[in-house]
Image (spheres, rainbow, N blue to C red):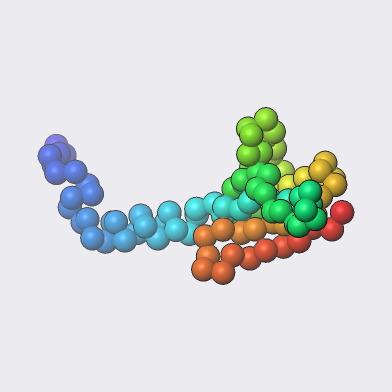
Amino acid sequence: MATVSSEHPCQASSSALWHEIRALVTSTAPRLFAVVGEHITESGDLQPHVLAWGLTDRANGRTQVTSLDGTLRMSLPSAERAAARFARQTGEPIHLVWAGSPQAAIVSVAL
């Protein structure tokens, strides 16, 4: 007959298990990005604005994007494709900005 422990498995080896869990979450977390557009104000200045936020799967690049106002949701093969779609729809210069790093990587998308 098997012995059943009343102790939760996480309590038995908490330090090693939590280290493994943190490593798993860190290595599989999606990458966060913003799609940023530029428009010209009445005074002629360029004004950046966030059009959408997205998440990209680290393993396969699959991307989910939601416009800032929530009216548009897309599932695309890559974040670059999402940015290109916004560039075509808005006619504005578009930047794909990867968040979460000290120096966010910015990719500009040509129209």
